[in-house]
Length: 144
Image 1 (tube, rainbow, N blue to C red):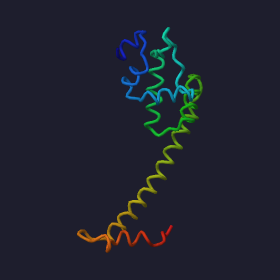
Image 2 (spheres, rainbow, N blue to C red):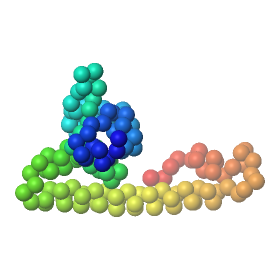
Image 3 (cartoon, one colour):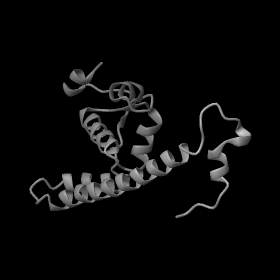
């Protein structure tokens, strides 16, 4: 059973949903527990049965997580999604904040790369551990 049959009204068990979305069963259960993913209906045998709406929710959650959006922010976005006629200013602000954070992390990563490059230059190839300039440099107090 795939997306097509689910969209036609079919149901998926948790393992099928996991395969279809490339999401672990543990993550799906976690998202349910955190109220990000609506509780699915249950079969007579108490199996979770997911529908098209659950599939769409999970795809949305996974996409948000791939963009490094926090669980709290995903909840906020899901709440905002319930009011489709409202202005999307809050959503824009959330994404703008992420862009700012990424810019800051990029600056920090460039500094880190420079420090590592400098550290690497302290040791030649074919050196013994005893004479390793990297290890010797790491023994000195960091200069933050």
